[in-house]
Amino acid sequence: MAAQLNLNVVPFVSVDNMMKLVHAIGVETFLKELSAFVEEDFLRWESFDKTPRVAAHSHDGVIELMPTSDGRLYGFKYVNGHPKNTKSGRQTVTAFGVLSDVDNGYPLLLTEMTILTALRTAATSAVAAKHLARKNSRTMAIIGNGAQSEFQALAFKALLGVNRLRLYDIDRSASDRCSRNLRGYGFEITVCSASQEAVEGADIVTTVTADKQNAVILSDNMVGAGVHINAVGGDCPGKTELQKDILTRSEVFVEYPPQTRIEGEIQQMPADFPVKELWEVIAGKAVGRAGAEQITLFDSVGFATEDFSALRYVRDKLQEHPLFENLDLLADPDEPRDLFGMLLRAAA
Image 1 (cartoon, helix red, strand yellow):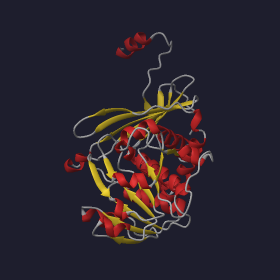
Image 2 (spheres, helix red, strand yellow):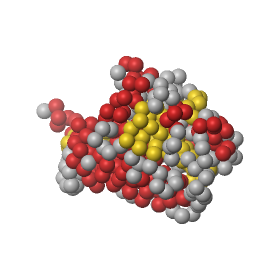
Image 3 (tube, rainbow, N blue to C red):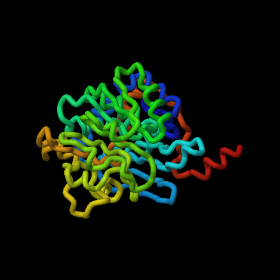
Image 4 (cartoon, one colour):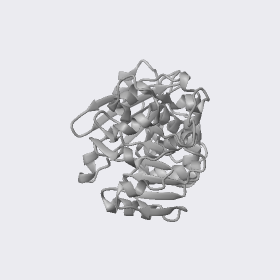
C-alpha cells in the first residue's frame, strides 16, 4: 500500500473490496497466512496491552469494543452480537476495525470486519487445534451451521488437513446450505440428523451456535477420549454450549483468562477453576496435549490481539493488492491550529 500523501486520507476496505481481496489471495491461502500472523502475535503476547473487551449488554445482544496495542500500532474493533437479527434479514455479527500509528495517533486503515472476523475466528481456532488436537486428526464435527461454519471447515483443512465433516444444525436447511457451499473444496461431508450422530468418529468437535442462552449443545456422554473440542459459540455472559461435566474432564485452554471467565464456557465454573493460556502453549512455556487419550478444550471467546493480527495482515496484503478506497476522514487544515479557519474557507 503506497505511503499516504494527504494527511486527511485513510485507506478504507469496503465489504466489496474485502471479498475481492479474499478471492485474489484464495480463501485457504488467506486463512493459512492469517493464521501465521495470529500465531506470531501470540508468540509476543507479553508485548501487548490487554484488557477485557468493553461490552454493552442488552436483552437481545451485545455491542463491544475490542482494543489493544503493541506500543507501535493500536487496533480496535467494533462488533455486535444479536442472534435474533437473522429473523429480520440482518447478520448476527457485524464489525469494523481501525489500525493506527501510536506515534501520532493517525489511523492507517479502516476496514470492514464482518467477513474478516469470521476469517480470524476460524484461523485462531485452527491455530489452537494445531497445538492441541491429536496429530493426523482428519474428521471434524461442526454443531451449529450458521455463518461461521464454512470458515471453520476451510481453516481446519488449510492448517490441519481435515477432510471429513459431520454437520448438524437444528435447522436442516443450514446444514444443507453449508454442505452446498463447501462442494469443490475436497471434503467428504455427512449431514447428520442429531448432534450425537455428528460427533461419532470425530477427532475434533466444533460447537458454534448463536443463541444467547445457557444451552447444552454438547453433553458429557457425547465426548470420547482423545477428542479436541473447539468451543466457539459461548462468547458472552449467560451464553454457553457445553455441559459443565465436560469441563471437569478436559484440559481447558483459553485466550485471556479475565475475559474468558466472564464470557466463555468456564463462566459455569468457580473463579479458581484451572486453565492454561494458549499463548504459553504456542511459546513452549506450557504443555498442550499430554497424551492421545486426553480431552482438550479450547474455550474460544475471541480476543483483541486476534483482530490486531487480522488488521496487520490486511494492511500488509494491500501493498500487493491495492483493493481499497481513499476516505476523506481526517481534518487537515493548512495550519494545524486553524481548524475554524478551515471551516470558514469551506463556505467560500
